Image (cartoon, rainbow, N blue to C red):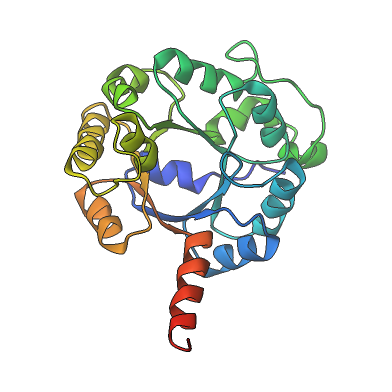
Length: 253
Protein backbone atom coordinates (compact mmCIF):
# COMPACT_ATOMS: atom_id res chain seq x y z
CA UNK A 1 0.00 0.00 0.00
CA UNK A 2 1.24 3.48 -0.91
CA UNK A 3 1.21 6.61 1.23
CA UNK A 4 -1.49 9.13 0.33
CA UNK A 5 -0.28 11.81 -2.09
CA UNK A 6 -0.54 15.31 -0.65
CA UNK A 7 -2.02 17.14 -3.63
CA UNK A 8 -2.41 20.34 -1.64
CA UNK A 9 1.34 20.47 -1.00
CA UNK A 10 2.10 19.71 -4.62
CA UNK A 11 -0.31 22.39 -5.80
CA UNK A 12 0.89 25.21 -3.56
CA UNK A 13 4.53 24.48 -4.38
CA UNK A 14 3.53 24.80 -8.04
CA UNK A 15 1.67 28.04 -7.19
CA UNK A 16 -1.68 26.58 -8.20
CA UNK A 17 -4.47 28.48 -6.46
CA UNK A 18 -6.10 26.61 -3.59
CA UNK A 19 -9.41 27.81 -2.14
CA UNK A 20 -10.14 26.79 1.42
CA UNK A 21 -12.33 27.30 4.45
CA UNK A 22 -11.78 27.49 8.19
CA UNK A 23 -13.60 24.88 10.28
CA UNK A 24 -14.23 25.76 13.92
CA UNK A 25 -17.48 23.94 14.74
CA UNK A 26 -15.80 20.66 15.80
CA UNK A 27 -18.37 18.66 13.90
CA UNK A 28 -18.01 15.56 11.72
CA UNK A 29 -21.00 16.37 9.55
CA UNK A 30 -19.66 19.86 8.83
CA UNK A 31 -16.29 18.34 7.89
CA UNK A 32 -18.06 15.93 5.54
CA UNK A 33 -20.13 18.70 3.93
CA UNK A 34 -17.00 20.80 3.37
CA UNK A 35 -15.28 17.85 1.70
CA UNK A 36 -18.26 16.92 -0.48
CA UNK A 37 -18.66 20.56 -1.51
CA UNK A 38 -15.14 20.44 -2.90
CA UNK A 39 -12.98 22.98 -1.11
CA UNK A 40 -9.31 22.42 -1.87
CA UNK A 41 -8.38 22.60 1.82
CA UNK A 42 -10.02 23.01 5.20
CA UNK A 43 -8.43 24.00 8.49
CA UNK A 44 -9.39 21.88 11.47
CA UNK A 45 -8.64 24.47 14.11
CA UNK A 46 -7.28 23.47 17.51
CA UNK A 47 -5.93 26.87 18.52
CA UNK A 48 -9.10 28.96 18.75
CA UNK A 49 -11.75 26.23 18.53
CA UNK A 50 -12.88 23.50 20.96
CA UNK A 51 -11.47 20.66 18.86
CA UNK A 52 -9.93 18.02 21.06
CA UNK A 53 -7.75 15.16 19.86
CA UNK A 54 -10.61 12.68 19.35
CA UNK A 55 -12.69 15.21 17.42
CA UNK A 56 -9.77 15.91 15.10
CA UNK A 57 -9.35 12.17 14.49
CA UNK A 58 -13.00 11.66 13.52
CA UNK A 59 -12.93 14.68 11.20
CA UNK A 60 -9.84 13.28 9.50
CA UNK A 61 -11.68 9.99 9.09
CA UNK A 62 -14.81 11.47 7.50
CA UNK A 63 -12.67 13.56 5.11
CA UNK A 64 -10.79 10.48 3.92
CA UNK A 65 -11.47 9.68 0.28
CA UNK A 66 -12.36 13.25 -0.67
CA UNK A 67 -10.11 15.77 -2.38
CA UNK A 68 -10.23 18.37 0.40
CA UNK A 69 -6.93 18.47 2.29
CA UNK A 70 -7.36 18.57 6.08
CA UNK A 71 -5.02 21.21 7.48
CA UNK A 72 -4.73 20.81 11.24
CA UNK A 73 -3.82 23.99 13.07
CA UNK A 74 -2.18 22.81 16.27
CA UNK A 75 -2.64 24.86 19.47
CA UNK A 76 1.01 25.85 19.64
CA UNK A 77 4.46 25.16 18.25
CA UNK A 78 5.29 22.21 20.47
CA UNK A 79 6.23 18.70 19.37
CA UNK A 80 3.97 16.50 21.52
CA UNK A 81 0.68 17.54 19.93
CA UNK A 82 2.30 17.58 16.48
CA UNK A 83 3.48 14.00 16.98
CA UNK A 84 -0.01 12.83 17.90
CA UNK A 85 -1.67 14.66 15.02
CA UNK A 86 0.79 13.21 12.50
CA UNK A 87 0.36 9.69 13.89
CA UNK A 88 -3.41 10.16 13.42
CA UNK A 89 -2.80 10.59 9.71
CA UNK A 90 -2.77 14.34 9.15
CA UNK A 91 -0.31 15.35 6.46
CA UNK A 92 -0.57 19.14 6.62
CA UNK A 93 0.12 21.05 9.83
CA UNK A 94 -0.39 24.77 10.39
CA UNK A 95 1.80 26.21 13.16
CA UNK A 96 0.51 29.40 14.81
CA UNK A 97 2.56 32.43 15.83
CA UNK A 98 5.92 31.68 14.26
CA UNK A 99 8.07 34.74 14.89
CA UNK A 100 11.49 33.88 13.52
CA UNK A 101 13.69 31.32 11.79
CA UNK A 102 14.49 29.41 14.98
CA UNK A 103 10.81 28.84 15.72
CA UNK A 104 10.22 27.78 12.12
CA UNK A 105 13.12 25.33 12.38
CA UNK A 106 11.59 23.83 15.54
CA UNK A 107 8.25 23.44 13.77
CA UNK A 108 9.83 21.51 10.91
CA UNK A 109 11.85 19.34 13.32
CA UNK A 110 8.62 18.24 15.03
CA UNK A 111 7.45 16.76 11.72
CA UNK A 112 10.66 14.93 10.81
CA UNK A 113 12.03 11.60 11.99
CA UNK A 114 15.62 11.41 13.27
CA UNK A 115 18.21 12.40 12.27
CA UNK A 116 16.47 15.36 10.60
CA UNK A 117 14.08 16.00 13.47
CA UNK A 118 12.60 14.80 16.74
CA UNK A 119 9.36 13.10 15.72
CA UNK A 120 8.74 10.00 17.80
CA UNK A 121 8.52 6.67 15.99
CA UNK A 122 5.30 4.66 16.13
CA UNK A 123 5.28 1.25 14.45
CA UNK A 124 1.61 1.00 13.46
CA UNK A 125 -1.00 3.74 13.51
CA UNK A 126 -3.32 5.56 11.16
CA UNK A 127 -0.46 7.46 9.53
CA UNK A 128 0.92 4.27 7.92
CA UNK A 129 -2.47 2.53 7.56
CA UNK A 130 -1.68 0.50 10.67
CA UNK A 131 1.49 -0.93 9.18
CA UNK A 132 0.27 -1.49 5.60
CA UNK A 133 2.39 1.37 4.22
CA UNK A 134 5.66 -0.44 4.75
CA UNK A 135 7.94 2.35 3.51
CA UNK A 136 6.24 5.12 5.50
CA UNK A 137 9.32 6.27 7.42
CA UNK A 138 11.31 6.88 4.24
CA UNK A 139 8.55 8.62 2.25
CA UNK A 140 6.51 10.48 4.90
CA UNK A 141 8.57 13.66 4.66
CA UNK A 142 7.69 14.12 0.98
CA UNK A 143 3.97 14.25 1.74
CA UNK A 144 4.04 16.22 5.00
CA UNK A 145 3.31 19.90 4.44
CA UNK A 146 4.50 22.46 7.00
CA UNK A 147 2.74 25.82 7.03
CA UNK A 148 3.86 28.53 9.44
CA UNK A 149 1.84 31.53 10.50
CA UNK A 150 3.47 34.96 10.41
CA UNK A 151 0.95 37.06 12.28
CA UNK A 152 2.83 40.03 13.68
CA UNK A 153 4.75 42.94 12.19
CA UNK A 154 7.96 41.40 13.56
CA UNK A 155 7.25 38.02 11.98
CA UNK A 156 6.56 39.60 8.59
CA UNK A 157 9.93 41.36 8.72
CA UNK A 158 11.50 37.94 9.38
CA UNK A 159 9.91 36.21 6.37
CA UNK A 160 13.19 36.25 4.38
CA UNK A 161 14.96 34.30 7.16
CA UNK A 162 11.98 32.04 7.85
CA UNK A 163 11.85 31.19 4.13
CA UNK A 164 15.39 29.84 4.25
CA UNK A 165 14.42 27.04 6.64
CA UNK A 166 14.31 23.76 4.75
CA UNK A 167 10.93 22.10 5.16
CA UNK A 168 8.82 25.25 5.42
CA UNK A 169 6.38 24.75 2.55
CA UNK A 170 4.17 27.81 2.92
CA UNK A 171 3.68 30.96 4.98
CA UNK A 172 0.27 31.96 6.24
CA UNK A 173 -0.68 35.46 7.32
CA UNK A 174 -3.05 35.99 10.26
CA UNK A 175 -4.79 39.34 9.71
CA UNK A 176 -6.39 39.56 13.15
CA UNK A 177 -3.13 39.13 15.04
CA UNK A 178 -1.33 41.39 12.58
CA UNK A 179 -3.80 44.14 13.48
CA UNK A 180 -3.24 43.49 17.19
CA UNK A 181 0.54 43.59 16.81
CA UNK A 182 0.39 47.24 15.71
CA UNK A 183 -2.18 48.39 18.25
CA UNK A 184 -5.14 48.25 15.88
CA UNK A 185 -6.85 45.10 17.09
CA UNK A 186 -9.87 44.17 15.01
CA UNK A 187 -9.25 46.92 12.46
CA UNK A 188 -8.78 44.49 9.61
CA UNK A 189 -9.47 47.03 6.87
CA UNK A 190 -7.07 49.65 8.25
CA UNK A 191 -4.59 50.70 5.59
CA UNK A 192 -1.55 49.95 7.76
CA UNK A 193 -2.82 46.40 8.33
CA UNK A 194 -3.46 45.92 4.62
CA UNK A 195 -0.03 47.32 3.79
CA UNK A 196 1.57 44.72 6.05
CA UNK A 197 -0.47 41.97 4.39
CA UNK A 198 0.74 43.19 0.99
CA UNK A 199 4.33 43.45 2.24
CA UNK A 200 4.13 39.86 3.50
CA UNK A 201 2.97 38.67 0.09
CA UNK A 202 5.80 40.51 -1.65
CA UNK A 203 8.37 39.00 0.72
CA UNK A 204 6.96 35.50 0.18
CA UNK A 205 7.08 35.95 -3.59
CA UNK A 206 10.61 37.34 -3.46
CA UNK A 207 11.77 34.40 -1.36
CA UNK A 208 9.91 31.72 -3.30
CA UNK A 209 7.35 30.69 -0.69
CA UNK A 210 3.62 30.18 -1.32
CA UNK A 211 1.56 32.65 0.73
CA UNK A 212 -1.78 32.01 2.40
CA UNK A 213 -4.39 34.08 4.21
CA UNK A 214 -7.89 33.97 5.72
CA UNK A 215 -10.73 36.46 5.36
CA UNK A 216 -14.49 36.34 5.80
CA UNK A 217 -15.02 39.24 3.40
CA UNK A 218 -15.70 38.15 -0.17
CA UNK A 219 -14.24 41.27 -1.81
CA UNK A 220 -11.00 40.91 0.12
CA UNK A 221 -10.83 37.19 -0.66
CA UNK A 222 -11.06 37.94 -4.37
CA UNK A 223 -8.45 40.67 -3.98
CA UNK A 224 -6.01 38.31 -2.24
CA UNK A 225 -6.47 35.58 -4.85
CA UNK A 226 -5.96 38.06 -7.69
CA UNK A 227 -2.95 39.73 -6.05
CA UNK A 228 -0.98 36.49 -5.79
CA UNK A 229 -1.86 34.68 -2.57
CA UNK A 230 -1.66 30.97 -3.37
CA UNK A 231 -3.91 29.45 -0.71
CA UNK A 232 -6.82 31.54 0.56
CA UNK A 233 -9.47 30.57 3.11
CA UNK A 234 -12.55 32.48 2.00
CA UNK A 235 -14.67 32.09 5.14
CA UNK A 236 -15.27 29.95 8.21
CA UNK A 237 -18.08 27.51 8.98
CA UNK A 238 -18.89 29.48 12.13
CA UNK A 239 -19.23 32.77 10.29
CA UNK A 240 -21.22 31.25 7.42
CA UNK A 241 -23.77 29.79 9.81
CA UNK A 242 -23.96 32.80 12.12
CA UNK A 243 -24.36 35.41 9.36
CA UNK A 244 -26.81 33.28 7.35
CA UNK A 245 -28.92 32.65 10.45
CA UNK A 246 -28.80 36.34 11.35
CA UNK A 247 -29.85 37.39 7.83
CA UNK A 248 -32.70 34.88 7.70
CA UNK A 249 -34.06 35.91 11.09
CA UNK A 250 -34.05 39.59 10.09
CA UNK A 251 -36.51 38.76 7.30
CA UNK A 252 -39.04 37.49 9.82
CA UNK A 253 -38.51 39.68 12.90
